[in-house]
Length: 462
DNA sequence: CTAGGGTTAG
Image (cartoon, rainbow, N blue to C red; front, side, top):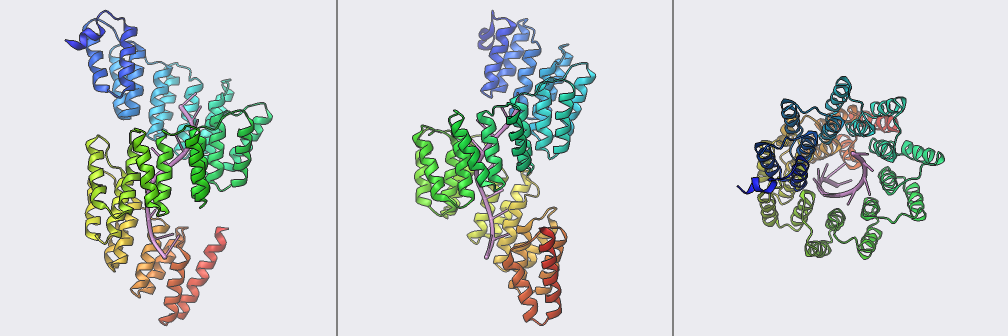
């Protein structure tokens, strides 16, 4: 019995170490086997054993599986502690389940356990991540009231949360206020605020903070480089972005999947397929293990090359390796099939996606609607449109254009008005297509009314 | 417990 021998003669503490290292390697089956063997040999798992498993199940399997460990733990008469709850709250955060985390937090209080700084930080993070900034801030206030001293992780969570809900300005003010009170920002803080400022278009402020980071004594890390590089790509400064990438490589950060992914995708989008492939070669040469996002980037590159066969082969390889395609993978493939003119195949791919459980993937639907419109099948596109439970400006733009191309300006106009009512807008070119179409096909009054509506919508937006 | 990456129109 090899498993028994592995732990024979060890204490519970060593059982825990063995389970922890198996969990770290994501080998939960073996971790369970070791646990069972341990129990059979008389080693009683303690709270640490169960906490380790709960953390691992949250990270690699699912929140419900983690809960089942909690039940097993209670059955075994081991009392959950603060760390147990913190791990579960972290799990609920991972899957964006704010009510679960609140529930767990409450339960912790009711059991007589005092939430610690981690409990508060994690709950706050969960609420921000799930789109409840006010509630997150309340948790922060509660923490202060309970005399729990916030750490830099608390402030970083606050700053990050504010950035992610589109309040980078508030985040920066908080950052400055904290500095005034003697808080010295760490590298995580710098990276967080730089990313937030970049993404909200405050490039000047981002540059200033980047300069301060340089003067702070911290060395920029791979995350700093990737953040700034991505920011350049987003604002169309490709040369500058590529320069930052090569600087990063020169500094020795040459085994970072995120950075490679970012630059490969930028090169692909720019149509620099050769350079993108050279970069792929370099990445693979460095022996980097591919993750899901990386596979998606490579599948996207193959699609842009028009090499759908290899793209699908790569998807197979990815799934055989245990990584399931996700909504990105399917959107990329649906779009590529449409662009190659295989609209039927794209439709099948979308159905396959739904069978796999990615219901109502907005992007994939948009791609198919656009593809259908481009081959003149506007009615099929409308049918699909009516099946969608959420729409965005892409959806409307494609359909409006498609209708106009068929000369159905009044339907297009109606759709455009619906779109405005929902607070969205379509591309100018689509707007013009409708008004010009109405005008030239004799509906001059409708054209005028639509123009007014469009102008009003424009005004109310600023 | 906190920071970076991958998909859609014109």
